[in-house]
Image (cartoon, rainbow, N blue to C red; front, side):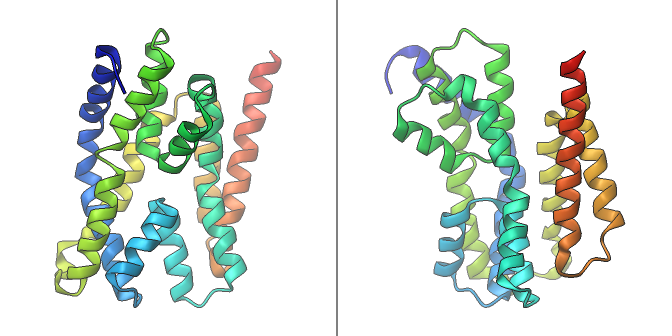
Length: 234
């Protein structure tokens, strides 16, 4: 990383990502607590976060494993929750697709909801940023997120049993999703997908093994794609 523009982009990304610490810290701590309750030690909880680094998917997989759901359903559910990352990657390709392979691999590994939301808005507003500045901004936005996710996963696993349940750390999950989904609902296709998936998730909540989640994800994506197709056809 070199040049004042690149350094400025990096620190702008850090500054923009800092507010997400308010949800990352309790969210990661909560995952550590849940992992501890599920029988994982601090090292295993950290390995889980290092391998997956996707909060919603981690919670989903851990919950299903605790319920002794078949492994294939666990994997399918975790994959369904994370399918949005494929769409995120496609969305960022015009901005970051020309990076060297190793830098694209770094972006792919650290891509999470928050740095995606920040980056896609930044790149759309400032289209004249160089490729190096865009990469620096993405890395900067990642710094207040992923390292703290790892660290506080360990904190949660170490002190999980000592945290009073009345603290209600689970408030972090809906807050995190509201924070990441709100800015992303920028088009009719996005809003349609979110609405259809929400209604379907409630409608099919009776299905065993949380299969309603898979159904809702599929219906939401199909509805969003159809709206996108119709808008594009006009």
